[in-house]
Image 1 (cartoon, rainbow, N blue to C red):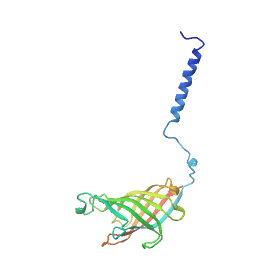
Image 2: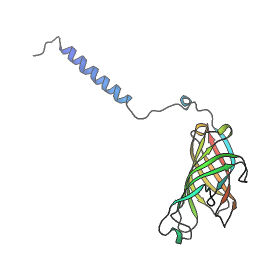
Image 3: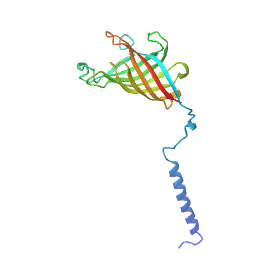
Image 4: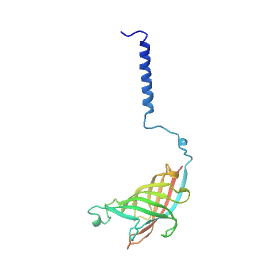
Amino acid sequence: MANSKSLPSIFTIILLNLILSFASAKSSTFYQNLSPKSLGLKKEKLSHLHFFFHDIVSGPNPTAVRVAESPSTNSSSTLFGFIAMIDDPLTVGPEPESKVVGKAQGIYGSASQHELGLLMVMNLMFTEGKYNGSTLSLLGRNAVFSTIREMPIIGGSRAFRFARGYAQAKTYTFDLKTGNAVVEYNVYVLHH
């Protein structure tokens, strides 16, 4: 039989173990609520970025290349099922020799069987000015025959952490012979 002097000690040990178990269970959660200030977030700003997207599919140095297609892509009036990988320059002006301010890197593909509608998944990576090294992530539908197409900005990095907004795309030029296009972008983004 247990000594009466050892009972409080055993009880104390069990109680301490329970307390420690609850304390450690609470601290091992995979999430926590934070104050925006703890991440250095300040009041949101609205920025407008204006640039030209050069989608070059022909010639010796294409910046957009087809990487996949379905068996019926080439017989489809919308090229349904094709996917292209892009590393398109972003420039200040519409001319190819205009100053490069970044790259559009990602993929687009024909996602509609009845009209030419592209699914755009790309990062707009900036290489100049105060946004050098920052990115914006765009994910949306591009109905290429519409005069102005609107696509959501769903995030970003560095200067654009927690970014949200939209991009408006408008075809500046499209060469029917080569397939090359220059698209004017106006991007409106809220960020900290």
